[in-house]
Image (cartoon, rainbow over all chains, first blue to last red; front, side):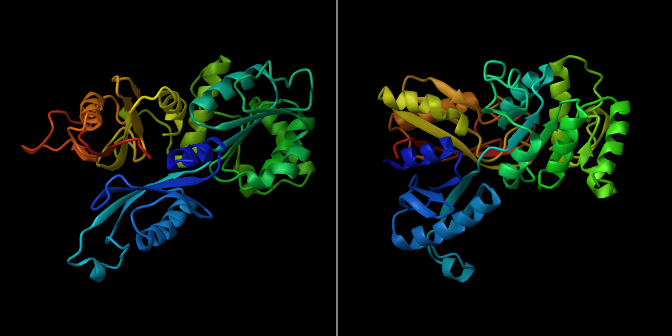
Length: 266
Length: 105
């Protein structure tokens, strides 16, 4: 396989992979393909620079960073070794697996949310215990449709959820919502949102207390009613308000109009 | 680049030569960060984008020159205000550095 084929097959399998490319210096355009286990294709020209850049690229990939680093032609990286040598600039580009969005509840809002989440690059899993609703035909845009209760889903795969990921609970049904919230709170997932009116939310807080979820730290992780206050109504508008809330909770912004704020935009 | 792979594979299977342009660095405000990518094939077909549309046509010109052998793979910079500058810039005032090379690896 060529380095490109090795690289693209990892990206398609959602396996972490990075490209290290010489963008200035000897061997411009040379490529090294690196995974968390080490280099798996290509070369930057000699074993020394390959070894040093592989080590650094594994670190950047672990952190999910994309960055330019500087070396000497044999991979020298300390400043005194770089005096009087050519500088090799290496562009290290990390390709992390896409973030996950688990959506509980196979309802109309689910299809719209799954569509919007796909635009944002999420790997989307729709989950509902009702076999007649949780079908591929209703959610062709989802990456997976699972017929299951929340608890086994979290037991089986909850460890995979991390700070970049989201759990959206759209079921409106306490016998589904409560175990889904409890399951999500037991993971490191970055965003938990639950659909329902303010009244439903108040009742849900009581039910959560019944299963021992009472601490403010836990309840503060749960965004409910789900979404930003955009005033929208349709499933699509609601989906936008949900992903807007996911973005603003990640960035820590208040989600006001840029025209009403000052300071940096990004 | 993830979003370009299907089209790149289609072009490769059709035997087309391809140039790949990747944003390696942004200074100041920029619409897309490092890693944003576009690809241009020898027929001038374009996929992806590297800015909000500010520099794409200049990138295509560079990419076609590289595919034609008139230019070597290199870093190109848009958004400088000095005399060496390219005639295009970013409307947001940032500086964008791209690496453009043939996808022959």
